[in-house]
Length: 122
Image (cartoon, rainbow, N blue to C red; front, side):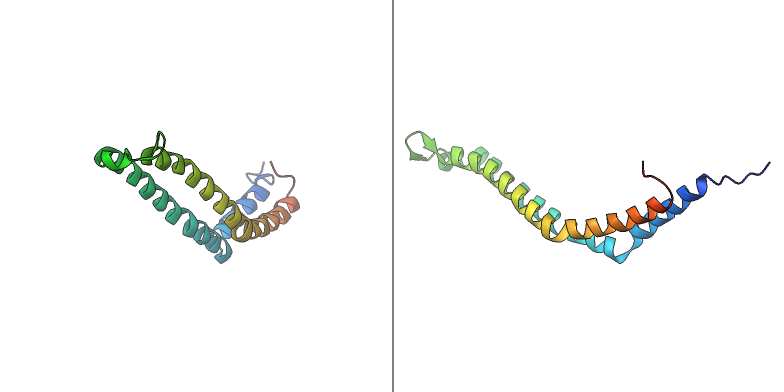
């Protein structure tokens, strides 16, 4: 009996291919582009949220200032938290469409060609 397992050879080559893609300049650029958007946007959102919380805790007079009728600064800031969340999601969607998805699709297509040579993907 042989200790070689021919069925595992394609899996090993596929695993090696995944590692090669992970080490590639194209994949590194993809990760760099993603981090270049996600990290600054996350920091900006947390700072904006922290400002809202800090003002709510320590600047009650300012936050309680009436703008129109019963609508005060705190309510407007609170609603702007939702608006900023949707704006960030929209900006990310545009960014991903232009910068992330084309590269990811190219990498995925290359990987698909390799895995189809070795059998169906699971």
